[in-house]
Length: 472
Image 1 (cartoon, rainbow, N blue to C red):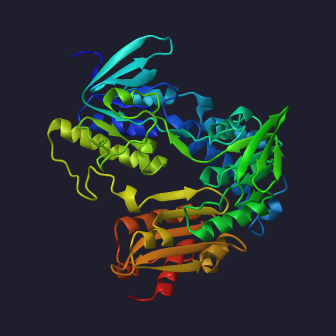
Image 2 (image 1 turned 90 degrees about the horizontal axis):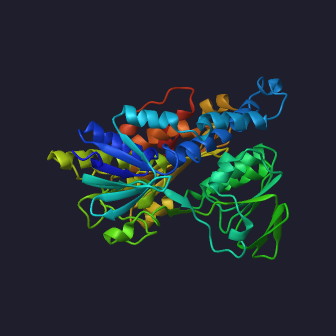
Image 3 (image 1 turned 120 degrees about the vertical axis):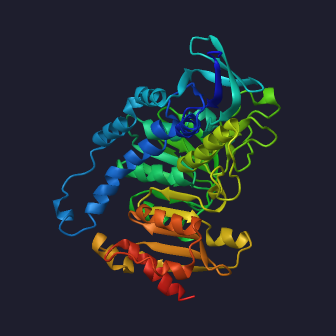
């Protein structure tokens, strides 16, 4: 056997790529990960883990201050240096030795360098020293290279050396002031984090905040950011950016200007496919990769794509879900085993379409799964939305004095099942898995009445939502 031949080659050793390789190896195949940065990828070092580590200390502090008897004990302020040090512990100081050790212990080979497709089932890796190694796949190649921050074509922006999400989550010192351009999850979370550090934050969004979620979610987060001292400019275009000396000036479409020490651009993502050899196999460099639900790239029997590059759901947990399906189906096809590729089958990522869960770790948190009222209506469903104020639930009043939160469930009126659920409030992320199970399992409303929430917990909001809906 050629030492450079494997059953599966995975381009990209982030969380998604690791899962593809792991599932394929568990299925009896050999696999190699090709990575030019850190094994563990974006989530481990620049996204999910460090960002949540930055957000959690202030969240815990605010939670203590919302409970009489506890708030009197809180006499100090946030220790920013300690927060950054804790963040560094989560990233292992940007050292991936433990991740490499895990991969090799799982029977997965790791090759360092930049991998490019150079032929049918062939990848050429350029090592850091400039040498080249050719890898060949007996069965499949999977692209799991992720995405990069998108820098819009705004006059002067690139020349101003803006921060991206990577800079925001890995900063060693916090600036006195920060302008955030964008209105999505990254913009809202980083505005929340840096405001807690004492940074003067201005958020500039060309529309509303968190526009893809239920409207009340963006409204509540906007109100909370303003209460936390963030200046929030909605429906405001950024037209020009200038860096002068130690500051950056952001000019807006209404003639205003915001000056800050740094500017963070959080305006979306672009696929990391520009330099991976797509043209060698007839695809367009820089494009998103279209796949079927087994994650096989359209038009190929050997090329797969998982995670952000597919644009199906740019979330780590959803990418890992796709990866498990892909790794399993690659092994099944290679071994001649049955393939379960119908909706909700073993080898498909059906949930990507209408059952995606997501948490925005602002304060309050936003936890959602499936459709919003608008997206369900646009998809042609006959729906009804039911809202309830979470603060009215006994468990919420125990959890925090003056608890503020809102819940919404979107019901398919023809089938009497949930199409989507959204919660906004402190720690509502812990409510999300129950909602996800209800949506994925298409649990009938009349059966949900028998899922009795424990008292007094915030989960009692489920009973209140059902009561507001009424017996079918």
